[in-house]
Length: 248
Image (cartoon, rainbow, N blue to C red; front, side, top):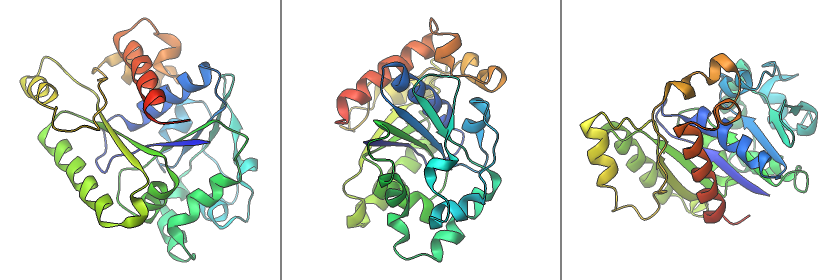
């Protein structure tokens, strides 16, 4: 089972839209797919028309008092399930702080799903926390959507330094990609053109588009309603690149 986390310390960089579209494309390709919405804002949960409610809240789920399978919901798309978020997820760090080996908690929960899914996508909140560190341990790869701006690159560098400090995070592969790229902006053009220093940078870039913003209006992945569009085609290329880069 392959675990792919959409993560960035910085918010507003396209994590949820990328998680929703990549999970949709994985399921469409025939892979049994789960998207776990770990952000208390529950944007991915909203997009897939699932009620943002987990009985007993995030704490009960983390403790194992409720089986993770019982919280999973089906979506409108064959092969794609969703584990919804809710506002109580904002307290997951507090719950993890009271547990033994908190960094292993997400991995332990996902182990119970081994054999049920081929791919698990984690849509993460923008933070460095006990929860995010548990995600680092559980994941095969961190997919890091990055806007081509100075501040976004600064946060990417901070993530690199944080991961390098801790041996337990060395297994996870970091795969950044440029997202929300607006070629009308000189800075965006310059940064995307001058990115050869990072060997881990994925080649595919996701363009800025109002069609992606409409995902919250249509409550569906952009690839499901505008597959002909530039961002949808870019997400297809991105998924093919990730699928090749991260062993299944």
